Amino acid sequence: MITKTEAQQLTERIIGGYQITKDEALELVKLEDKEVLYQMADQIRSHFHQNSFEMCSIINARSGKCSEDCKWCSQSAHHNTSVDVYPLISSAVAVAQARDNAKHGVAKFSLVTSGRTLSQSDVDKSCSIYNDIKKEVDIHLCASMGLLTKQQLRQLAESGVEHYHCNLETAPSFFASLCSTHTIEEKMQTIAWAKEVGLGVCSGGIIGMGETEEQRVELALTLREIGAESIPINILNPIEGTPLAGTTQKLTEEEILTAFAIFRVVNPTAKIRFAAGRQEIAHIMDKALRCGMSAALVGDLLTTLGSSVAEDVKMLNDNGYQIVRG
Image 1: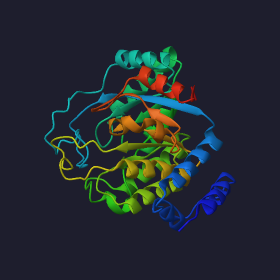
Image 2: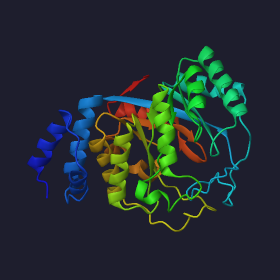
Image 3: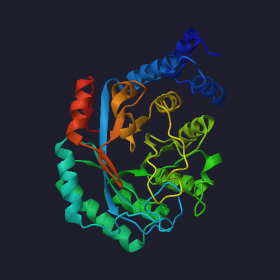
């Protein structure tokens, strides 16, 4: 078992450029005194990010009727949920929300669309929306549009998109038990193409879907391998009508904080980002912030309620963080 002294030595090595091994990561999550791990994560976060904190926001740009059978998702046509269904939103709606978020200090804004991928027509429309936002709003642009082709990703980049979001969702060893209509390897290929056309990579996952602690470590290591610069961590909110509703055990506070911390220790320079499910830890947010987090997805989060941007700004300022715009 790693001692407190050994943990400090390991922290200093990580700050110096060392990448911890799978065995070391597994030892850390098994520590009885989790405060040792949390302090490691906070020290690493402080070194690489100081007290800077980045906010990003999304808009549900096309909703429902997804062909994929992901067990966690209310937008799947395979599940019986009450999710809204609508086609690609107008440019005016997207520009208005981007402008409002920029006024609150949000650094990045993303269109997120349901479905396995987009038709070429919808890619063209999306690029037109991005061009309009770029002309009118001072905000960095991101996209989350499924398994696009390399040429479509290049088209997004040419329209001003800087980062592409494609969550791996869970560990490679667990993914097939949650989705049968596409593979994690297809996601990795999309991410590789995004990098090839010059896009930064945002990729994370959902914790609490029945995976083991070891599989959460596996996901953290896989995200390091693919070079994820931003890692959103969602806490599962089981939605009625999805296969995971009523079938998963709620994570404990310690399990959630440990996941945050190990994602930071494994990925020291990445932006470890709060995402959906923050209502589960609202009462311990001060402590969660000290487990390596340096960014957050704010506002309304697709099909689940997010957090008020103004409330987040106040909470971050109260905790001594400086909001950055990129």
